[in-house]
Amino acid sequence: MKSWAREFYGSAAWLKFRQLIMERDNFLCVRCGRPGKIVHHKVYLTEENINDPDVSLNMELAETLCKKCHDEEHLSGEAAAEGLYFDEAGNLVKKG
Image 1 (cartoon, rainbow, N blue to C red):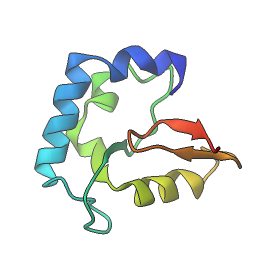
Image 2 (image 1 turned 135 degrees about the vertical axis):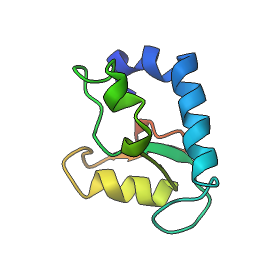
Image 3 (image 1 turned 180 degrees about the vertical axis):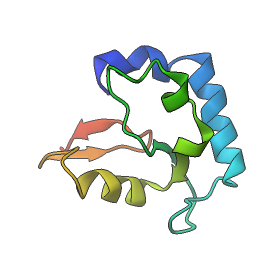
Image 4 (image 1 turned 30 degrees about the vertical axis):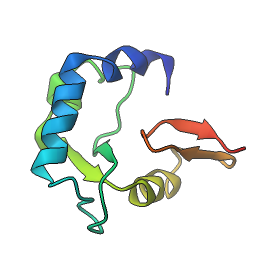
C-alpha cells in the first residue's frame, strides 16, 4: 500500500464504507459471482483524489471483487509491474 493511502484505508469512514459496499453486493464479486474479498475503486485513487469523498467514498464508483478479478483489473493495465501482485486485502506486494 502506498504511504499516502495508509491513513485513508485505516480510517473509520473507509471501514464503514467498505462494509456497506460488501453488503450491497452480497459479499460476492460483481464480475464473476465468486466470494468477494476486495472493494475496488472504479476510479483509481491517487494522492490528489483520495481525500475527496465524491471519489473515494462514492458508492457508484465502488464494487466488490474477488482477488482474481481484482488482479485482472490491475494487471491488465499499467497499474502493476512484473513481480508484483495484489494480496487478499488488495495491497500491492512483491512476489516471493
